[in-house]
Length: 166
Image: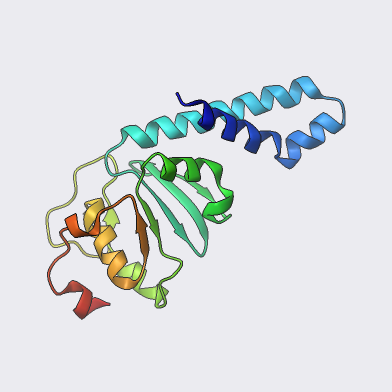
C-alpha cells in the first residue's frame, strides 16, 4: 500500500467534526477507535473498486458516487473535490465520468446502466440495460460530460449516436 493513501485517509478522518468533538471532550481513545474503523472501511472500498471490472467514479450535480460492485455504491452529497476516497481512486487510475458540465441533464437519464462486476446485456443498449463502461463513457462524453482515465478514442460508441441523440 502507498503511504500517501493512508496519510490522506487519516487526515480526512481526523478532521471530521464528530471525531474532533470526541477529542475536544477528552474521549481520545474513542476518537482513535472510530478513526481506525473509518479508515478500514475506506480501504475496503478502495480494494473492492480497484479489483472490480467496470468500477468507476461518477460526479454530478447531486454529489459523487463510487460504483464498486454489482449494485454497490458509496455516495457522498459533496463534490468530488471534498470526497477523499473518490479523489484517491481517480488519482490511482479509476475512471471518472463527470456529468456536471452537461447542459441538458435530462438526457443523462436515457443512458444505459454500467455493468459493474458482471457481463453486459446484449446490444442494443437502452435506458435500463447494462452496457460496458466504455459505451456509457462515450455516450456521456457526447452529451458534454468530462471523462478522466478513459481514452475516448478507444471507445466503441455506436456511429451517429452523438449526432442523433445529443
